[in-house]
Image (cartoon, rainbow, N blue to C red; front, side, top):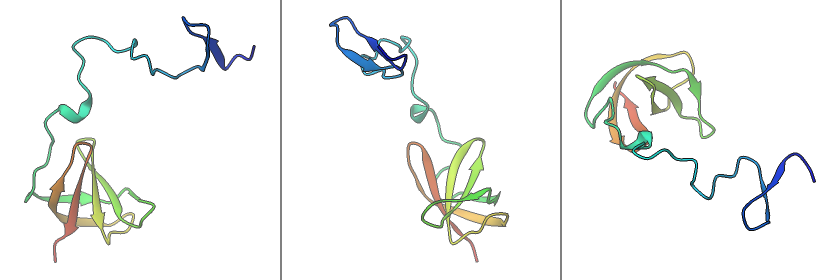
Length: 96
């Protein structure tokens, strides 16, 4: 048998790293998307664009929280207004 597979309790093979049984979660631990966000709709932030997303939006971070900025280029320092906040990221627009 290959090293990348293991047998589970029923004797079926499964790839290592597959945690579909959810037995690896610790009780009381909450995923990050339930934590309070460091931004809210209407906030105006000074951010530096760290990278460019596959669809062309700029990517910046505020306290580790991802902010996508429309029409921003990597390396730019921009003033951004937050227009939408989601569980794992926010969307902002460059202020003119």
